[in-house]
Length: 467
Image (cartoon, rainbow, N blue to C red; front, side, top):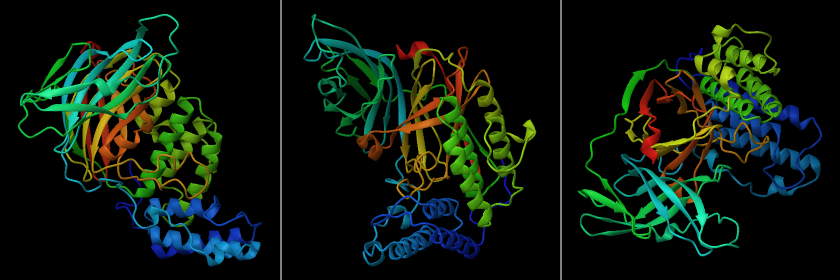
């Protein structure tokens, strides 16, 4: 995918600020939309975060225009508090991108496990199993990626299945005799198939030189030993250059991914289309993109194929759409994914200052859940397009994008990124891929694209490895 701006941020900041102030002036001529101290959802807020995320203006300038607008609106509405009182300044107005841990030099390492242990019996007699996919760690932390489920109960009349398993009873010991306690970083959501996806953190961190780790205390006397010196798994990793494009181009491409994901999972796409119309207007009106930019053309073509009017004209040739979009258009409503768990481990080289490790996957008929440990990167702005117009969501971080392609040729987009509060600070992420994996897929290409380069890791889908 290429755009008219070869280097991100080449648009004229002065022209973009002028455009944003003109949007604010136009909004001031309308009926006031703010009923109390700000910030509140409004058109100027959407334009501000759009232009800040596109690099057309700095976040600080975007927030200054917004605060000026809210002050003026407060005066015109007779509410002096927004005009004379301090505004809540969102953190993105001071710095944007990266999130906690950005710029860190930690290097994640994963070890494939692929073993099953019994869950400790909880107070009401429910028992189950948890499948250890991989161990992901850095010098300061370690976590197990897990798929768990209840299997049955030891007595009649027990209450319904509890949401939380007694993972606090699970622990580990290493070759030096050091004991580790497992804590639940991210419980995950039960998906209707009795499974939930978890991240179990180990405390303390593994000491350098640790040769093996045995997981199992509290698991009904059973355990599994993880060889920390085992050679890397059979993943194939390729790094290749890609053309530089502007942040505005990447933003529209990501918006197209979001539209396809919403259509694939049955969500309403009309609200997204309404927001996209305004976003495209802001990018073109501010000079961040030309109306004939290829990113605008292909988004118009995608909208046409989804039956959405993005205000960009009519039909676009299929050749204008990238292969991933054409694939999801064809298979987006499939429900034929294999039910299985694949344990694998793949450590990716640095891209855009961040490092990642792939730590296993669980597949269902509707989607696949990919476990990732991230260092120096946190997904920001995932709700930027799907939330209502306003300043609450962070601007979209367009630095990195994720896609996948299985061995059958079916492409997959990231519909949702999830992490618990503890997992977020530790860098453990779950990516929900849509559409589901092809039933005959034997491997998966996970593709991370950044400014100027792309990393592709091919991991095997050995469903027996998760047993």
